[in-house]
Image (cartoon, rainbow, N blue to C red; front, side, top):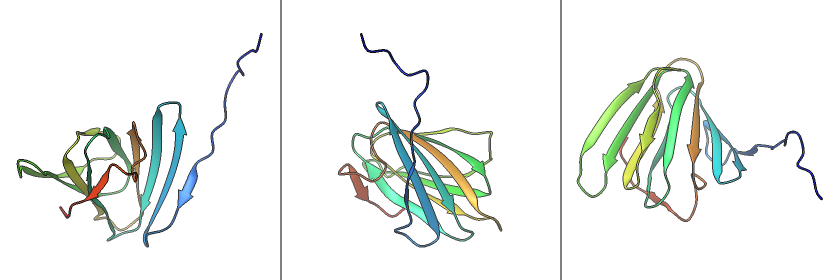
Length: 126
């Protein structure tokens, strides 16, 4: 009989494809965890998913988030307070984040699919 290890170690994969941000992601079972570091003045995102469920929070920094439901056109902008708010982004809601502070901002995401996958569609909101 095969025994389970006491703990498992997972390694983040890092993407620096886009200037001004570092996206580190790992899949753990059915959950993707991503850590996004954004330089001051940089905007990230501007996309939506049709099936992917996303939750995120700001760990550090001053972040403006903008949302738009792509079917209804409903819009919302929020300044997200670090370690105080958790945002749930349902399918068909485009989202973008901007570091409006003077130091690096860090956001942590949880999703059921990779943030950038075949279920990712461009839609500018910020």
